[in-house]
Length: 133
View: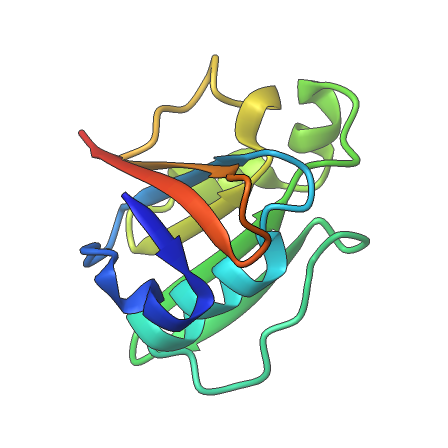
């Protein structure tokens, strides 16, 4: 499906507790914009959503549910993921987890929702594929 920033609402995803959303994309493929859309418009996070590039993850709370937004781009190996308490967060069943750059952990954890985003020849358009397990 091809989408633009104006029609992101065409994505049909409804995350629930224990969901692991893995985002795969090209560089410069709306990473921050897309993550903010999912957190604000799909999961209804009301606080300001910021990129976790330098903190590795941000935590948000909706009712009694914790939502974690990971950016693993800067991690070099799985041990670094372990060192930031990633395993503890992933093992908690009451969490929803959104992961940017999940390649370093996909051998250990499988997504319940996998989203592939790639650039198209149009600057304001991306190709999006949503796969649900």
